[in-house]
Amino acid sequence: MTSFSLNAIFYQSTHRDSLGEEDLMVIGKIFRIRDLMVRVNRNKRTIVHWERAGKIPIASRNKINERIYDEKDIRVILELMEKDNFYERRPKR
Image 1: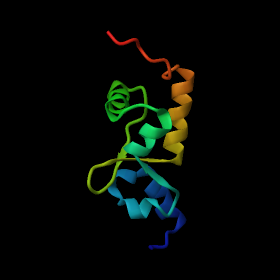
Image 2: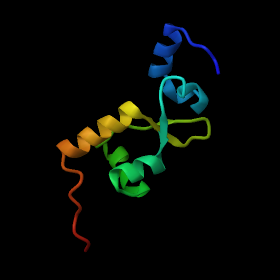
Image 3: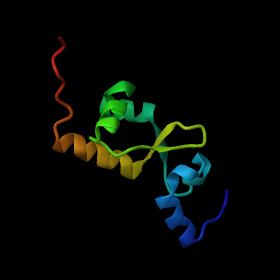
Image 4: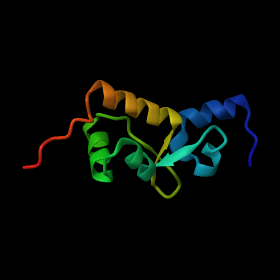
């Protein structure tokens, strides 16, 4: 693993999309969309829809363009879901 200075950590936290997943691991645990799906009990399509609609923050991407989230992202998404009642499911038509 690479050692980082405070400037590198600041850069890392503000420019996460340009870093590899192994670089992000230095700061904290990284979650993929499937981890978020389990945590919020929703499928990938719903999470991507929320992101595109601006209901949740846009996910960072790793080197192979997968959506990735850190612990802060997960916390923010859960808070937004609770605040805006995302847990209420619409009835099927």
